[in-house]
Amino acid sequence: MGSKNKLKRFIENESFQNVIQPSREDLISKNFNFYGNWKDLVFKNTNPIIVELGCGKGEYTINLAKLNPDKNFIGIDIKGARFWRGAKTAVESKLTNVYFLRTQIELLNHVFQTNEIDEIWLTFPDPQIKFQRQKHRLTNPDFLKLYNNVLKSDGIVHLKTDSEFLHGYTLGLLEGMCIKPLNSNHDIYKNRNAPDEAVNIQTYYESIYLKDDKKISYLSFNFNEQ
Image (tube, rainbow, N blue to C red; front, side, top):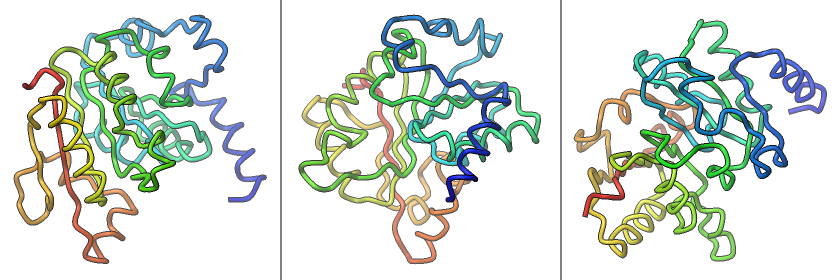
């Protein structure tokens, strides 16, 4: 993407009411007004809040919002030029139950209060297979602690991936934590026991994976399921 297009998208993001872009300093210094107040100040309802981390272009966030008008959705990514597409689609589709937040995932505890989130979706995150990159793996122990903190006691984490490595790695961590998965499916389009939201929504890249006969897996878990 050219620098002019990125700049244009950054400027347009500023005009979208469904895009929130706090500074790192505001989050860390606790000057973020929406912390603990997402339902009251942003969505203005008491519906459940579902977050997609590393949302990219926002395809999954948008489609989840369309399928579940009685729930609130937040797509999070540090790259605003990417989720510009999702934010613009939400505006054009007049979706009032979806927002996009530009921030780093490791700052999640500064964005949400303890027990503020109902569900987390991780859709095709980079598996970060190299050992030296494991600190960026979105299901590593440090990130799992973050998720456990912001999720409600019965909150669910969903992982949808084309990486058998990431699926197996996450299963191994859960086993070490004595957590039984709610659902572990290594080929959702063959075994067909994954939830509709995992099967009926496909990203652009997922459609390419399927054309290449890649298996798509799904894993869900609750930190209290022991």
